[in-house]
Image (cartoon, rainbow over all chains, first blue to last red):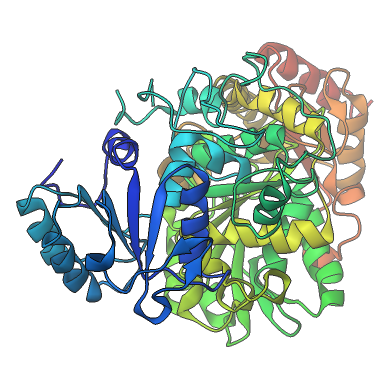
Amino acid sequence: MMVSAHDRYSDAFIRDVLDGTKTIAMVGASANTVRPSYFVLKYMLSKGYRVFPINPGQAGKEILGQTVYGSLADVPEPIDMVDIFRNSEAALGVTQEALVLSPLPKVIWMQLSVRNDEAAKLAEHAGLKVVMDRCPKIEYGRLSGEIGWTGVNSRMLSSKRPTLKAGFQHRGLGGKPTGS
Amino acid sequence: MSDRIPGFSTLAIHAGAQPDPSTGARVTPIYQTTSFVFDDVDHAASLFGLQAFGNIYTRITNPTTAVLEERVAALEGGTAALATASGHSAQLLTFHAMMTPGDNIVAGNKLYGGSINQLNHSFKSFGWEVQWADATDPASFDALINDKTRAIFIESLANPGGVVTDIAAISEIARKHNIPLVVDNTMATPYLCRPIEHGADIVLHSLTKFMGGHGNSMGGILVDGGTYDWSSTENYPMLSKPRPEYSGMVLHETFGNFAFAIACRVLGLRDLGPAISPMNSFMLLTGIETLPLRMQRHCDNAQKVAEFLESHDKVAWVSYAGLPNDPNHERQQKYMPKGGGAVFTFGVKGGYEAGVAVVTNCQILSHLANIGDTRSLIIHPASTTHKQLTEEQRAAAGATSDVVRLSIGLEDAEDIIADLDQALAAIDG
């Protein structure tokens, strides 16, 4: 899987990535409440992830109560996943910044429509997992079953009980996939 | 296991459905409720702002209906679906998301009579125009497309003429003009034909027919193929422009390859209101679980009845794509090789009066205006479904005065044949 063509990812791979992540640095996070990056930031926070917004123009301010940093190097804690909300070209520079962090992140994730194979190669060479052209909110919603509430084809089949978090309409990833 | 792609019958039973998390109920419960409580005000705000997945009000989403939507999306190979109160309202919401006054639809002329009425009259009062192409001649679509055309609309298997439409050829024309192709797949169902695989962008159904299959519940659905790039032109502002209804959100940017289904839900269904009842969603889901078994039996029975009628001396002609000499047979073999469907027409010798007589003489076949029931159905379109059309439109739709339409059910084929045999025998009497 690690050196795949990145055209498709198995559900198990995506689930491992999301399960193994606790902290996310979101590069290109927006304070505008109708931008996709704001949606994803809010959703991942609601699922219990710590999210560090990265946006030089907003550095020192807060988005959804989280302090915004000017660059990846400014984040004071270890980052598990770097989530890139920039264009495909810019993804290379962001990945290079990520690869000089200590400790190294575990995952480089590029959002829907963002793909940079050179960056992916660099990151995988350094032992990181790479996901491109996907959205962690959609993938979390798909694997938890939440996205089906909106009539979206999750492409998941399961005869097991969905994993519930707090509240009525709040699911988690739960254990390993069964029959999916 | 996790990367295995499930087969059609498995999807028909499982897609979209998990055990109910609070009770363990294995069959999807009927969530017969109008509304859903919020966890807190922030959760409510997230739901209203489309930032979280979840239910607010059954006019917009409902957990029983959601299973139906995901089930049909999976069966059609689409990214998402939106269920509605009827097939007609699925058409309304589809075109509402694409059209502004002065725009037009280029539609194949072999459509269900009710759809012809909807496009010719009701849509006209919205300022949406329709141009009729020859469904059997893909080039005729090309000739009618202009800079105001926002959609091409066809039926995969046309009702009632039994025409198998050349979806791939018409899709090529749609792609050339960068216009989405909308395909009504009611008569074929995804068991026989999956239009997205042949280039359709949106698939529509009246679930009332073969999908539900038992003639007990109305319902419709639209399936987003996830294939059309709504941001590639300025022509679809509901998808590609900031929406004032949602503080300037751009739906295609936010929801990607399932944005069309979202737009039809949060702008169309929310504001126009043709929501399906959760009870109907449940009935339709139960029907869909046996779709592969039923549809094959429908086709097998229809084939036998068509062969019987073809050899009957009071029958002038039979139009069934499953017959080797039928002009649609080659396309049927390409697009729906498992069968030619269960709705077809034949011409009875003696014209209008003979057509009325056959319908009246039947004892097992029911005289009614529906298709896709477990029961075999018979109707004379010229005196019923197509009565409001002009003679010219009736001819174009394959519903001239001698035409009798059958929807073959799941009874023993020998009994259906015996009933038609006695009904034909009694014509002269």
